[in-house]
Amino acid sequence: MRRATVSGPVAPGEIVTIFGSGLSGAVTFDGTAATVSYQSPTQIDVTVPYTVAGQTTTLQIGSAVLTSLDVVPSAPGIFAAVADGDGALTLYATGCGALTKDTLPRCQLPVSATVNGQPAQVLYAGIAPGLVSGANQINLLLPSGTTSGPISIVVTVGTASSKAFSFTLP
Image 1 (spheres, rainbow, N blue to C red):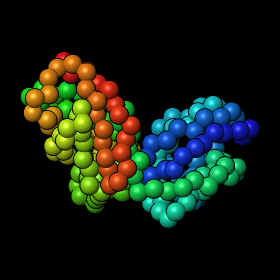
Image 2: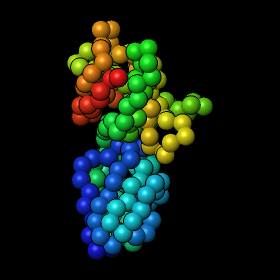
Image 3: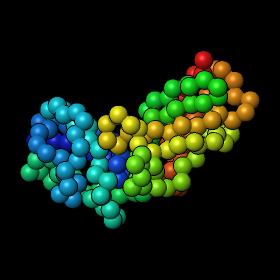
Image 4: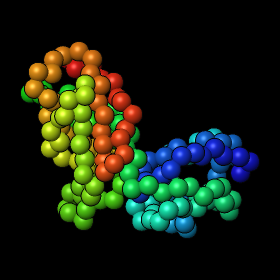
């Protein structure tokens, strides 16, 4: 491996992207293998192991120790939204942190959402069945009075909030 760029804290179960050149080999956090969803010589997409705990974790690719990263309980980020009709919206995100041990695992930390600054009712927040490890699904009801057109969505997991995600309702 020639070089890699990694920044920011990571949360258990978060999907992260590592950029660089000459990237090859297994990716581990504190010696625990990460789930790889994409790998090329210049980019690796992985899910941080759910077992990552403590204040820091050591990221390694192949035999190269890259860096020590801060660990946070959650680091939500929204990457897609789908309008389900009847005032419902499904968000696809990552970074909700630790999960419950339920048959359909849910985010352990409390999850809330706002749409255009107004609270939305969260119906479900947990794994996204059928998607890559680390993908979270958040089902919510839009605040009353939300009409078609552009909206801004923010998800908060525990005390960490996502960046605003723009979406246009049909």
